[in-house]
Image (cartoon, rainbow, N blue to C red; front, side, top):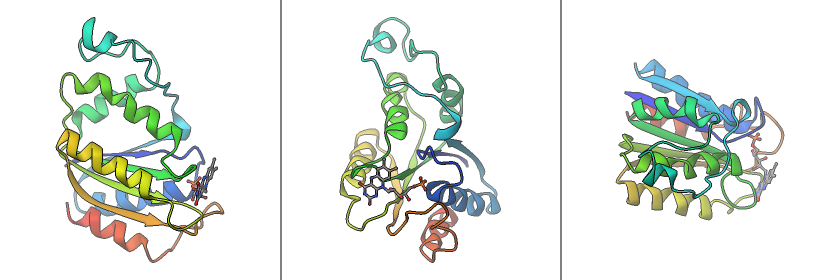
Length: 176
Ligand SMILES: Cc1cc2nc3c(=O)[nH]c(=O)nc-3n(C[C@H](O)[C@H](O)[C@H](O)COP(=O)(O)O)c2cc1C
């Protein structure tokens, strides 16, 4: 399967990147093709709600930024994995901008069939908002959820390295 992982953390080598790479390693070991898009490599502006993508050029966003590079990748992928640090009780703004820009593609159909959510935070009990969003998107776009993994206690860069909860991510990736 083609798998696209969106790492919403702007911190290169951070905890979220460890979660994303953990998923990718297991999926690749099982023969899947995986692409990770890191927020620190891209510039994606918020949706302008101009409706150009609905009315003028169906499915095409008027904004010319990194979404032009990401779009063919997600058009080709069957599985989408959202990985994000918790920023003020939800996903990062960087990841949310990419998700909002799905609006243009939604007009012509988004090919993902399955999804997963990987979250990391400093504190416990801060994941509800991000998880609710994930369930809502799955329901709306009829994606099957492969699962959700949350790691609290993550603060310093690299805290996630060797965390036993990474095994939960490997299990989800291995289920594909
Ligand atoms: C702007 C910002 C906001 C944050 N907000 C929260 C929060 O609301 N709750 C929490 O537990 N951790 C919060 N954190 C901590 C991060 O979620 C946590 O350290 C995460 O592992 C960072 O991921 P990274 O290593 O990929 O950057 C915040 C960090 C930043 C930089």
